[in-house]
Structures are given as structure tokens and as C-alpha cells.
Amino acid sequence: MKKYFYFRDVADEDADDDILSSIAIPVDSIVGVVPVAITTLELYLKKQGLVNDQKVTLTVTRGKLQEVMQEIAAYANNYIHTKAPL
Image (cartoon, rainbow, N blue to C red; front, side, top):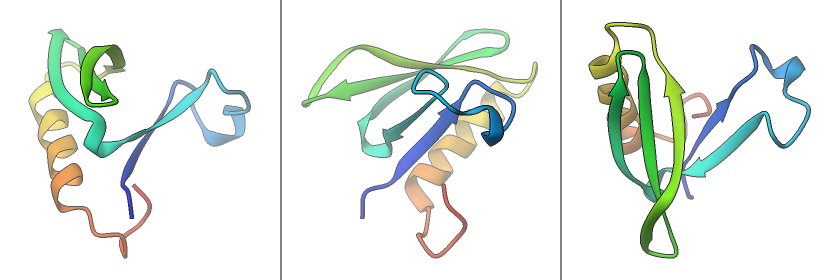
């Protein structure tokens, strides 16, 4: 079974009511996680085997960039489907 990360830019699922508010991306499409500012990470994605300009931008609590990158890697590598949804 393929693993996905789900991201949304609204506060809770009640407000997630249109296609522009959220995205689910295959975990195996992530080719890089890059800090670009004190509170910003970019996840670069590949499409059809090619790395291109597709990316997901995450806003992170100041001082937590490294911790968030480690958690993303841990969930991507060690996630077991019997746990809660990813």
C-alpha cells in the first residue's frame, strides 16, 4: 500500500472544503526537504521520475526546522499502516 502525506492550509478539517485547501502527496515522491527561511521548509517532489519545480511549502514554529525534518523522515521511513493514519 502506498503511503501519503496529507497537508492542509486551513485550521481544521471542517474548513477543508475545496481542492485549494489541501493536498495528499505520495511519500515516495519527496526528493528533498530544504529549509528556506527561519520558519519555512520546502518539500521538493518528483513527477514521472523527474525532479521539477513542484513543491510543498510548510510553515514551521521558529526553532523547530530540524525537528520537523527528522519527523518527516521518520514517518516516511518507519510508518506502519496499523498505526493512526499518516
